[in-house]
Image 1: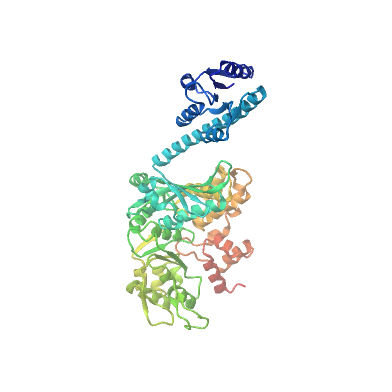
Image 2: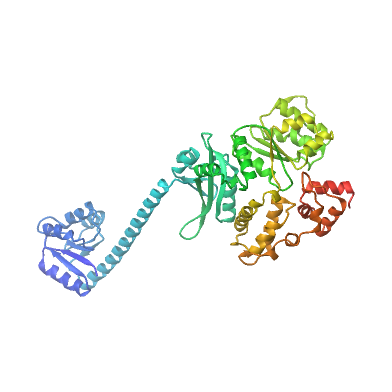
Length: 570
């Protein structure tokens, strides 16, 4: 039970209190005055009954002593001469209650039970607070000492707290980040910060092991792995996001030295050809050199453009994408360079062109081989003079833009045929990155499979562990006319059909484990030639779905539309 101290200069009262309280199972200590009480208070009693009028100092002095030293016992004052003044003073000094003599057994035990119940609650509260304080101090110590940058954000995307790891990773002080919007503070380093945090806020799921390359606040190149996790309280209420950034720059350097590099930005590959491309991209990321990315449809040309932008000094500025084959000549001219009001029918207001929108950043010109000779001439002027002229305007505007172009066509052949300007070709091809088709980098297929399995597990909230040997063998042996894009769609197709935790061969698209004759009719190098019969066959198999037909043939949708017009297929 509890330990109770009774302080009174009348022995009969001490003995009476002791008899009543001991019958309740309590341990009773007794003192006749102030001096006796001081030594017994060291025994840390739970409750003290003290007479206000003692032979020496008053009970008020004992109450004041207990309060000044922060002792945790509760005090009940006892007096034979009650007054409003003494009651008020007692409560002000922290007394729990005030009893008037003669004290009967019922009153004594009632006050005792109430006081000890409160004392127990107070002790539990103090223990909980001490535990929380200890845990908080421990977590703060861990938070401060871990080398990873740990950043917590609320539901509105404001940074709540950041640790010292942000100095090593970003060259930013924690107090510079706290209270800012994460898109402004982190988004300019790499778009993956915005993407991962946004996905975690939207889906409330973990996003793990996302590798990026960027430049820190001092402009030095960095390689990091991002983890984004939901921030929840003890009741599992969703409060925001915990972002962990692990700097693996040194390990990435060792990978390059050992020729074991498996990715660059979000591009996956370990084949010798891909390692050469990664090394070239790393060199190009430090410059503003115009780059031409070539390769079959579905080989990842846009990913290369994104990696060049977000791992370079322009990462904090816009990256603007333009699909040159998706627009007619007049629309493309307006999209690229802008127009003034009244320049043509329907031009009811001024329009800012994509080059202007990309000022300070990068413009990615996809399907560059499809632009007309007039657009080629205007584009050549932009590359030579670094200035644009809006449609319907005579004034020129300077633009600071890095140009990355891409095509799945053979531009050299188009130059020889007079379909593409030679001077523009060499302006675009200051450095060329030739992406190999997937059939020429089969060593990368297992890596890509695992990459897509992880990605779809996160996207779909699944827990697929992998593929059967038969399924992996089918994926390894398939010729992949649609390249990485087709592989991704094949894994997605398998995820949709799979009900368990392992992808089996029958979950894959039929053409993968029963290759179609149509694939043999698709040419290998450069832009794939698609004849009328092959196109009709693909459209029949896809039920008229142009995107699916494009995947079957391993060409872009734009090529499908162009061939439909060329062959006049209804």
